[in-house]
Structure formats: structure tokens, C-alpha cells
Length: 569
Image (cartoon, rainbow, N blue to C red):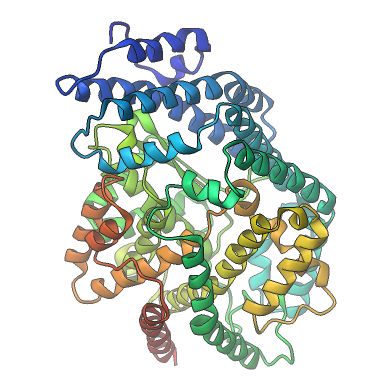
């Protein structure tokens, strides 16, 4: 490439499209052949990495402070001016490579993905996708502004969560209803956003000549290893295998708490009415102890996490104006991850950081791959990286390893994690089944009241054991509070699949932790150069989600919970 890109991403982010376009044009004009294809891919990667990293950095800015007007303005400028033009140029380059017939080494899967991208690409959808991203920012602003006054203090909805763990049931109920009331105040705003999201997605599918948005999205997500029908079969397997186990857990909780009906505010308190686990008070404490855990899992992983601490690649504490949830993104050109979350001092925060740490290690392990196209990993395996790390870290939660807890507290934490994981599968099935219904019935799902009804129907089917009488509106609007439904459609079944894979890896670790961690890291390092079944196999798991596989992994989880409970007797 005759011209040089700036070495500093911050300088690049100030460039208008007029300065960026010549780099793409030079690649379009350059002859490509078997001799120079690797250099061509390297030059293409460099410009695309800067584009991707610019998007990610601007997105981070809008989530760490949803009130930052400058960040919002720059993100919108990027979505209006840079993103559409770069998407078009990138598609032109994909078409050029495909037309060449060249098959560079380690590029089989990226070429497969490019063929799918070419099939669905329509230039007019670029602007629509930009609008979708902008709506995601609106959703974050809506949630980030939700606060309540509790005991004279303004608290975010996230900051209310520790109160749900208190042993006083009346206080829990009062706090839960206060937060729910605040969320319901935005019911119309959620619904208005929803209709805008849905209209954009239906239009994109129509433009690309797909029968529906699900078919379009399936191709967009590069899902070649399973079909929508197989995903729905997974939901049914969860109903058959997991729902009865989940119901038994809820019944056990009800009996231990000594209540006639288990209510939503009873789900986070310790069943033996012990004081809540308090693993940390400040984000720095959370970082330091998590570092010790990672060092015990594998010194190299600990080194990766220390790099993140030193380079300010962590934003962990919750505060007003911060977007909801947690994520790990990457700064692509420098091959560095960034972790965002909303810690409020509960054990779930520990699990979240261990989880996002797994994603971060994925970024580090793939840093040796030369081309950005090789970094595209299906979330069905990317979530294995994160969920497996939660389980691989479990033996090191105690203070003896520099962690958070005494032996008994660690047992409680592990029980909480395993029970939460088991109970997650039915919830995942609700979210996944809801999304299938939405895009199978777009005329119906455009009406929020129909969405409420369907969500409630699925909730009653899969989430058996908790009484929502008198708070039906809170139940029916649960889909409002699942950001994936709004922001990343169909991104949720991956969590359920990955949890199956992660538990298989954990089962291997019980026999040989060191070898299992080594295989885990080797699998992460493959990036997107092999298929999903091959990635699972490399990590020591099977890409299967039938009732037999579910029964096997659940058996281990239930047995371990029983053993840990005996430890506490």
C-alpha cells in the first residue's frame, strides 16, 4: 500500500471519509494473485481493523456514559458517514476476493462467511443497519436513566440488587416493587422503540429478498451448523429435561424459606437466611482478587488480565447514566479486549467478571492470527470461552488462592452459580422461543400487547414454580428488560448451547485441570479458522444439544450441588 495509515487509532478516528476512501480504492485497483494475496489480505485487514476499532471505541464511550453528548454525536457521525461507506467498500473487496477464486491458507471458513455476506448484501440495508445501531443507543439511554430513591439515596436499578438478598422479606418485596414500578413507567417508551426496531429488520429482510428476518439473520450470523428447527428442538429438550429440575429447585427454595408461595423477590436471598455474600466493596478489590484466581487457573491468563488492569481496559462499577449489562469488546488493531460491567458488590458480579474474562482471553489468544476475517468466531463458541472460564475458576474462589471467600462461602457461591446456570436454560428457552415467534409472526409482534401475551404464555410454560399473581404487568413486560431482544436479535440461544459445551469442559477438568485448560486455550487460538463442531472438539466437547447430552451435563451439576450442600451441613 503506497500511503500509510496513522499509527495512532485516535488520529484515525478524526479522519473524514474522504481521507479513508483512497485506502480502499487502492485495494480495489490492485491486481490480486497467488503471489501477493497474503500481502493483499494484510493490507485489507489493517484498514478494516481501524474501522472496526473506531466503531467499538465509540460504542464503549456511549455505554460508559449514556449522557455523553459528544460521544453520541461522534458515534452518530460514524454511523452516518464512515460506517455505510466502509461497509460498501468492504463488500466490494469481499466480492473481488471471491471472484479471484483464490483460497489462502487458513481462509476456508472466512471465505464461506464472505459468500454468505455476498448473498445477503444490499447497499440500501447499510443505512438501515446504521439506524438500528442508533436505536440501540436510545435503548441504553432509556435504561441508564432509570433510578429510584431508596432510604433517601438515588440508586440505579442495578444498585438495588443487593437489597434483594436481604433476609427481611418485607424489605425485599418493597425494594423489588419499587424498581419494577420505575421500569414500568417506561412501558410506552420501550414499546415505541420496539416497533421501530421491528420495522427496520423486516425492511432489511425484504430488501435482501429473504422470506423473513429470521432467515436473513441466520445467514448474517453465519449459522451453518444448525437450523432454526434444530434451535427450537433444543428449546423443547430444555422443557423436557431442565424444566422439571428447575421446578424442584424452586420448590426446595420455597420449603427452606418457609413460605406458602415463592415470589420474584424470594429468588436471590439465601435459603437458610444467612447474610448475603459480600465478596468485595470496591472495583479495585474485585480486580485484584479476580487476578489471583486467573493466575491459579493459568499464569498466562493472569498475565493477560494484568495487562488489562495496567492499560485501563476495565470499567467495572455501576453508576448513574451507565448503560445496562456487561460485555467484552475488542480494540481490533491492537488486539486488546475491553470489559464493561455494572458491579454492585454481589457474587453475580464475580461470575460476570470471570465470564467476561473468558471473552477477553479469547481476544488475547487469537492475537497471532494475521487477518481480521479470521477473528470472526460464532458466538456459540465464543460463549464457551466465557462460560467455561467461570467453571474452570471455581476451585480458586477461596482466600487460600487469593480469592473472595472462606471454604463455606465458596461452597455457597458455587451452589449459587450452578443453580443459576441450571435455572438459566428455561429462561433462555423463553427468550429464544419468543424471538422465533416474533419473526415468524411480524404482523402480530408489531403490536406490543401481543408480545406481552406471548411472553407471558412462554413464561408460564418454561418458568414453573414462581408465583406472579398480582404483578402480572411486571411479568408480561419481562421482554422489555432483555436487551438482546432489542439490540442483538437471535443472539441468545448461543448462551444455552455454550453452557452445554462449557459443562463438558468442566467435566474434563475434574479429571485433568491442566490439560483441559491447555486444550481450552488451543481452541480459543483457532479463532474463526475452523467450524463450530471443530472448535468444540478442540476444546474437548461435542456440538450436540439433545436430551441425552443435556441429561449428562445436568447430572454432574445436580450431583455437585448436592455434594457442596453436604459440605455445609
